[in-house]
Each structure stands twice: as C-alpha cells, then as structure tokens.
Amino acid sequence: MDGLVLELQRDALNKMASVTDLLRKAFVVSKKLQIVEMETWIRNELYGYENVETTIPDYRKIRGEVKVFNPYRGWHPLNMGSSKIAELLSTRHIGQPVSELDSLVNEHQQNILQVPFAQETKNQIMNLMKVPLEPSLLVPQTEIVGILDTIRNEILNWSLDLESRGILGDGMSFTKEEKMAASKITYQVTNNIQNMNNSQIQLEQLKH
Image 1 (cartoon, rainbow, N blue to C red):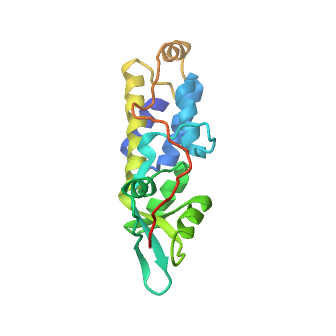
Image 2: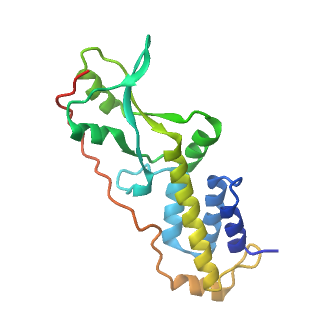
Image 3: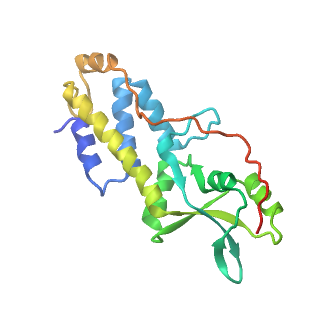
C-alpha cells in the first residue's frame, strides 16, 4: 500500500480527481506532519478566504469584461470614461471555496462565466448610469481553470519535495523520524501572494 505522499502525487496528476478532494487529502498529510503553513493555506482554499484580514493569493486574481444586462438586448459592454476605473472593475480577487470553483468549471459548459459585483459596488456603478442596468463581470472559464491548475501544481510540487526528503508515510501514518524531518522545513506555499487592496472603488466619469 502506497503512503499518503505518493497517493497525493498520483491524485495531483489525475485530472479526473477534483481539486477539492485533492486538498482534503493534502490536509490530512499536513495535519499528520504538523505543517502549520500548509494546513492554513489548505483551510483557506477549502473554506474560502472569508476573513478580511486574510490575504487572497494573487493566483486568484481574475480578469474579464464589465457588461450590463439589458432585458431586451442581452449583455453589452459598459462604457467607462476612465481607464483606471476600467482596470479596477475588470479585475477581481475571488475568495470562494475551491468546491464552488470546481462546480463552476464542471457544471457550467459556457465559455464565459458571470461573476457578480458586491452590492455596494453594483449600486455605485448603477447610480452613475443614465439608465441603471445591472452590471456584472464576465470572465472566460479558463480564468477559473487556471486557479484550479495552480492549486493542483502547488500540491504536486509539495508532495515531490516531501518525497525528496524521504517523507512518504506508511499507509495513513508517518514515522517519528518523518515528522521530525518535516518540522525542520520552512514552507512558503506560493511565491506570488500579494496583498489585495480592499479600499473602496470611487467611481467617477462613468457614462453609459
């Protein structure tokens, strides 16, 4: 029977294994090896980045096109008078649990996905329109796929690092020596985590 680390590698390479299930197995490994940095990251990915003090990783930044929905003509682009405003509104850091991202990719076959704005931002945008139509960010499905692939690659690289250090596990257990070896490693889950600016978006010169 393979140890947990080799199972983790196999699942990371298996595109049929969901990222949610992969994270759950990675959580078991991190918990048994008492690797706090990985455990914290995995918890955030599984349950979502809900805490306002929690930094959302930069790989969770998506880009799309801001459009408004006209009940008679469907979706059409929103004309924004400022390039700075356009940049702010067309990019988002999303903190939803990985299970929701998995569902978006697997249960929706559209190439374009709708990501709604927070109610406060939506109200700001609509208040500046001559005809208030509901805005939303429409993003390519590949943006969400990219997030899931990054997580999968992160777990694969971590499991390979554990193997290179002789940390494999025996079934569902790890030896005292393996736990000791894991405790001496300093983990940095990603190299591209950046702070997300949570400042209010001030919308000016927005014309529809």
